[in-house]
Length: 447
Image 1 (spheres, one colour):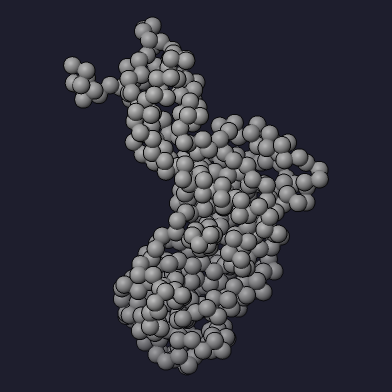
Image 2 (cartoon, rainbow, N blue to C red):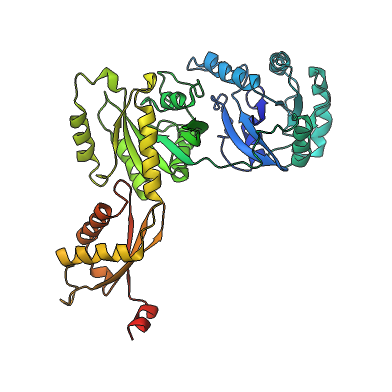
């Protein structure tokens, strides 16, 4: 088991800032608004040679205006129950509050090692105020400032001192998952429910309330003995409906998750028509050239009214630039077809990493040109396509050398892409195609 270091405290003591500071990435949303963090955010890190999972949690004692307080508390309790070490964060500037006393009481019943961390001590002048927190019963606090990068090494040493001795089944490094899957879609399409089905636990909060998920949440899971990473993202809103900083952060996190992913699952609600947000997400996926599965969720509720073929035709007609994307119909609440979606994603993942021999690629190019010659250039001369080569994978990237690259029309480029997709092992993934002029090296070869 990989030990977990769980960060807890009342709202607005800087838990998410400290979480980002320790992992040295901006993963958690940092915002002065109370109650932004709701789910457990887990990041696997390696600190001074020791692998651990750092866990950020919601603020204890916060009364969520959307009625999710009990669900947020359940996530905090689940984090504490699995903690090897707890980082109890307090705010030097505010001094001890009744809410801090309540957090101390709740932590105590779990009996695990605790590091009391007095955060927001941005300068030495604030240090004397930190000693008031010793009354909470966890000894003298460790004084830090996540904002000003004060005493990070001391905090890491304190964590390492309290971790249990390594066991034989702990990895020696923060191993990467085999595949990263981003779950994207508008609000209330069932992304979080799908993730919980993969994890076989209530790993992220689900509710009928739109906007329940605010962060992008990494959840590790296993299928057939292989490790994967699901990235649950906030449901997006139309641009004109984004009214708060949290909406902005959520949109940014979802877009970044698409860039991080190996394969994207674009979710739709079977009972709702495709909207502008869905099209915007599809545009982002296309720009990033990511393999994608169209996932139509809540299918059991509407299967009697709509045939799968009708929905698939609807998707094909709406997303005409993505005819290669597979379509899956699932019921996430019951786990139906969830495993099939992962199998499909694995197939796309392998396709996106295929590398085709140059000889095979040029055979396909020659056959395509013989079947349909490229149009003439601006001077009426035929455009010659000399050769093609694959220069990259994920996405498969093909470069063609031509006599007049700018004269090769978009329709003809699409024709070549379709020929490559049909004949090469890239049937269901995007392909990037570049056309360049003949280089000096090519001319030297000809001479």
